[in-house]
Image (cartoon, rainbow, N blue to C red; front, side, top):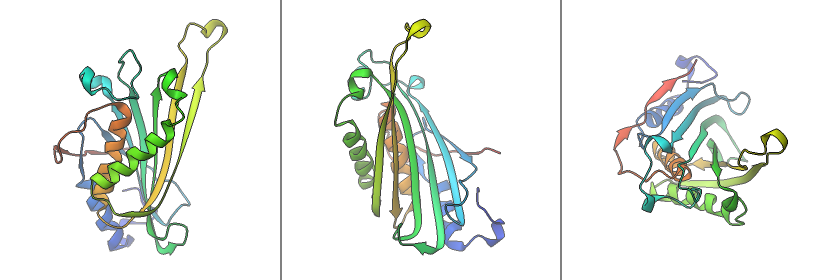
Length: 208
């Protein structure tokens, strides 16, 4: 695990949290890779990088989400999930644990100007947490749209808009359910239909 201390010195409560993450269940389309955790945010942390490619298992037209371009071209989404633990607690977090996440996907030009796009992304996160039975507090998020327009020798390339959502919240229990909820949101961004609970365990792959 990506922690800042020798594993023998890791508090039992954080080891238990890591075990819950490893036994979480979610979509087999999501590939999770353990990456170095960010420095300076907490004494203990684990970071996971996730990627989903809807072209590998594209849904039928009736299951295409609103974030699909009109052409029906499947989308790709990727993101990061970080679990922080500070035994001293934090008044900002309102607890000892904090989950910090990031998701990025590409939308079509028309959808990118929808004023409700950020609100929809936030509602997906809330719904994913609630549907997975997650208890949490002090949640917040920011949605950003990044528009790439092309000119001159690149004028033949289509305009592209990326939607980025950064969110964090304080989990109260069942860390595996929180990871499962986050991967469900990632699937929603990529337009991948939700699969039944417990289909497969999320495979952790260590990245050195």
